[in-house]
Image (cartoon, rainbow, N blue to C red; front, side, top):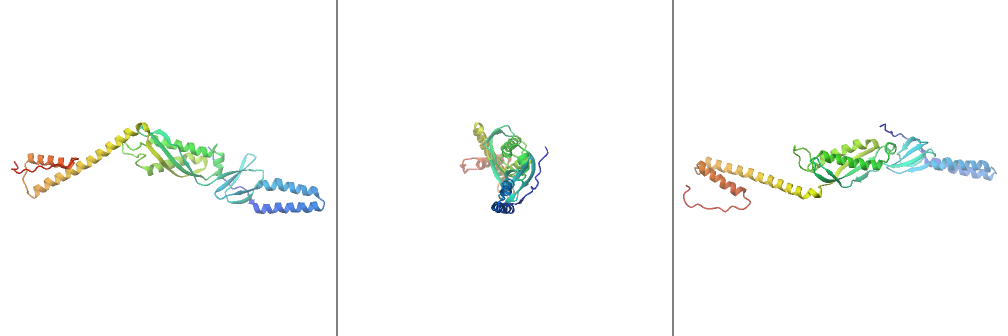
Length: 284
């Protein structure tokens, strides 16, 4: 698609034109006083037709897009009071930064699990001509393309568990936000829109699987904790046997070593406090 590129419109300081109009009215009054009403009427009519309709103001971070006889003639982005072609249509396009908060969308993540997701997109128009003439409704275009990009992002990445250890929506928020922003920049380029920031504002499993996924997360947390406890216990048992052997505190055969390892592992890994039994007799 061929884009409409912004160009500066022909404009004149509005206060200067307003002074000319007021001067023309004064001249017309003088002509009426010297009995030249026809010429005075022509001057007044010309001032009304060619003067006042061409006056307009542009606020800071606003713009006016001029269209004359179906042809784009230019854009005025400079704030101030201006005069341009009085017969041109002057459409206002704001250049201010705006937010779009998407609705909570129910989509499937990369693993096929239904999730709820929403995002906030910070954007602004940088090309008023493209925003008006290259898309039907640039605000609606931003909304639709944002939701489409969010759906596409969800289908690409899993919620919080990846079989290959790759990026997830929950585990890599900064990377996900960066990916979403780049996706939106490509989609909204034709509308003359710049994406300043895009970030997820809501992320959760859908209600029908939320409880099941919560139990899975709890199970994964328990497994990870038990694994760490077992690794630590093995290290402590190894260190105990090594120091007993090096310092020759007691000589243990393989059977007694196995029994000692069993007792230490039970004491260290058990979730309840171990109750020691004191052997007052012989070791064997």
